[in-house]
Length: 82
Image (tube, rainbow, N blue to C red; front, side, top):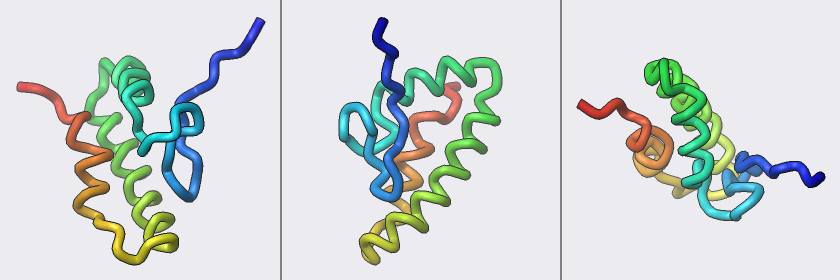
């Protein structure tokens, strides 16, 4: 039986280990939304922590990395809908 591969970030590039796109990819977002479905605030804190780590790691690779772009990438999709 094959083990399902998780859509997790490859550091320091912050690209998905499975699909290779910028993490969090769609599959990772769906998994995280399901995992934190009863606590959206905790999801936001978790993602903000990861986003801060990504800013630091990606800045070492590319000094022109945009913290605002990364905040959008990591956090905008996870906000609770009204």
